[in-house]
Amino acid sequence: MRWTEYLLPTLKETPAEAEIISHRLMVRAGLVRKLSSGIYSLLPLGLRAVKKVENIVREEMNRAGGSEILMPVLSPSELWTESGRWNVYGKELMRVKDRHDRFFALGPTHEEVVTDIVRRDVRSYRQLPLILFQIQTKFRDEVRPRFGVVRAREFLMKDAYSFHRDEACLAKTYDRMFEAYTRIFKRCGLRFGPVEADSGAIGGDVTHEFMVFAETGESQVFACDCGYAATIDTAECEPVQAAAEAGQAALEKVSTPGTTTVEEVTQFLKKKPSELLKTIIYKVGDEYAAVLVRGDREVNEIKLGRALGTTDFVMAAAEEIEKVTGGPLGFSGPVGLKGVRLIADHRVAGMANMVTGANEADAHYVNVNLGRDFDVREFHDVIVAIEGDPCKCCGKPLSTWRGIEVGQIFKLGTKYSEVMKARFLDEQGEEHPFVMGCYGIGVTRTVAAAIEQHNDKDGIVWPISIAPFEVHILPTNVSDEDLRETAEAIYTGLTDAGIEVILDDRDERAGNKFKDADLVGTPLRVTVGERAAKEGKVELRHRKTGETIKLDRREAVRIIVDTVKDEKRKLAV
Ligand code: ATP
Ligand code: MG
Image (cartoon, rainbow, N blue to C red; front, side, top):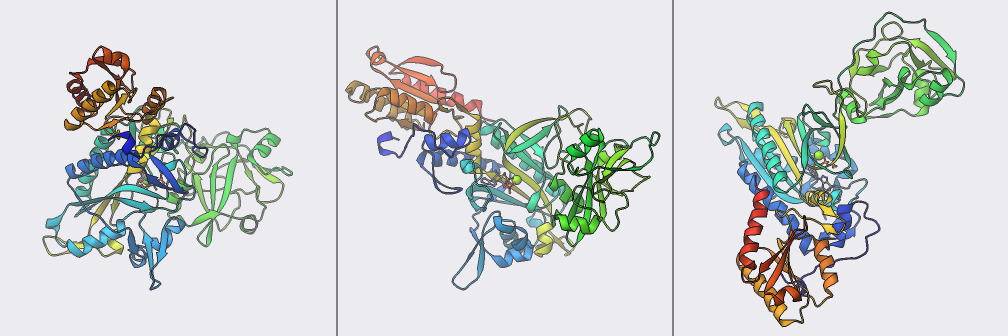
């Protein structure tokens, strides 16, 4: 490709709204342009990188036994009503109305549509397992679109769906997909880790997210040397042993005027936050639940949702708290609390002589003990994990890192096939719902994640497997015929050899061209400069290491072709 024939608008200034490096570089290097909040056009260079990722994903999906399809973006609301998600999905689901006043969803994911295809065309166990995938534009009206294409409202996703006769068969495909994902992200040159995760609106029990290590990542991961790794919404800590019964002091009600926060109460009573029991009242459907956690810990509402078995809950309002507990906000406690479901975090079992609210204004109890002063039947892990919590597998302290989620795989079970009546016949002619799995990769997000990981002060440093171009030819002066011809000859030679080359044939100052080359980040740069040309040489420079070698210009094409092959081999799996 010749720069002068291309749209490659590089920018010197840093775009104001770009908070993270990949977003800044994608704009500055002319990969994307914003159309509206969370909506981006891919310019030629951006599209090339996206296509590279797409191809790696496609190859690995085919290798894992998938068949590529393309489903529509628009799907009728009836399908979503059938699965129950027309209401559950909430505002994130973009909806449109046609001229007949029929509603459609702009697909955020395609479980409903693919299940509909399969229930019509797959009837026998002989056709299973079946893996279908597509690479397609998805729509999600994110609350906070940000970081460029990392959290967009319209983005490119690979989504795959598998259909099985039983869980054992699903487990095999799940493992195969896990392996395919590992191969994909390795081939993209990413440093990443698979982590146990929460299944959210998609549903199902077993799920892993693939996280690219990045300090700017929105996800916090808890990990242990033993191999355990989980997101903040799933990271479980080892349950704490019950406190010894000996040493229980007498229950006492104390006056605590105007102290409503953990800090105020504990300071007033000269106690530590870890000695206080927080009681948080939630409205769950039409009922109320009190969630009990140690004073120094916070509730994780995703974990709480799993403990409650529903997502239909909110923190109760002050008037509701008053009605349910008899006392104002800030003074709730489990002692004497009636008609309210009690859910305690595991760690509460290890507490003794606690401070709790007394369910009346300006009063707390001290020396409250579980079993003696109140009872809890439901213990769950409902708190936000923190660094140093003991690992559930081995007890060693958990450490944390941040990451960008680039993919997620789920065992769905029969969640969709049951409600949508998608069934097959077994050997005996008996009907069963398909057992399903689903597997997503954010294609555009993966490109951004790669840049987030591979950059330096001058610009992008592409892994060669997903670089828009492999070689960047830079004649320092195009008015010099000798330089121009040498550059053209190398360009033709490399292009003929199947190498992807960009030739900076602009009549620009060499300094600017070098700056742009670094910004755009092509792995190998060939400089055709005046001094070297006099000696019949050109310079080959590795963007990543800065390593530069002089090549005889007659041998340049052959050596560069070999270098490209070597570099690619390093990322092969
Ligand atoms: P997140 O937790 O980041 O919102 P998700 O868990 O809702 O993502 P999935 O439903 O698992 O996303 O979608 C599969 C993949 O699609 C994600 O792993 C991610 O790489 C990508 N993805 C999801 N939402 C977006 C978005 N708003 N913009 C770009 N890519 C996205
Ligand atoms: Mg996800």
